[in-house]
Image (cartoon, rainbow, N blue to C red; front, top):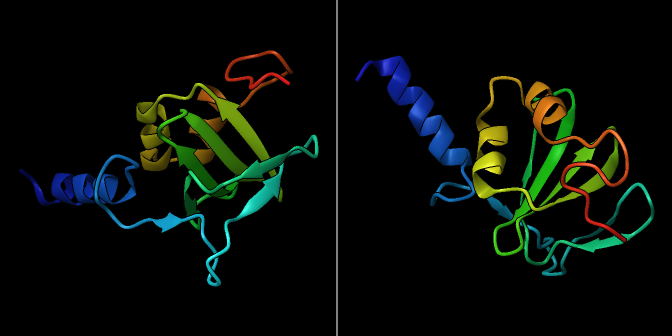
Length: 121
């Protein structure tokens, strides 16, 4: 295997929500669980989510995923949005995409309520 392929595979594994790579839980330094509000002011408890702060994207600041419920929470432009029914593979592909913002906009982002990955009321 070429060195560049090996580096990419290692990078992808380290950001996978499936793998044993490094990640951050949604717990704060004091042991409390993060709670955020989405754009519609609904509270989201991130206790069951695995969250990652994103520094390599100009669109996404944070990505959180709950494998058991297939829920994705993303911070974009300083506000949070929740996407339901997102497959783990899609969340992993988001984290490994060369352009996370482009992948998010093309494959996940809702254009209107009731659209793809809508969580309902």
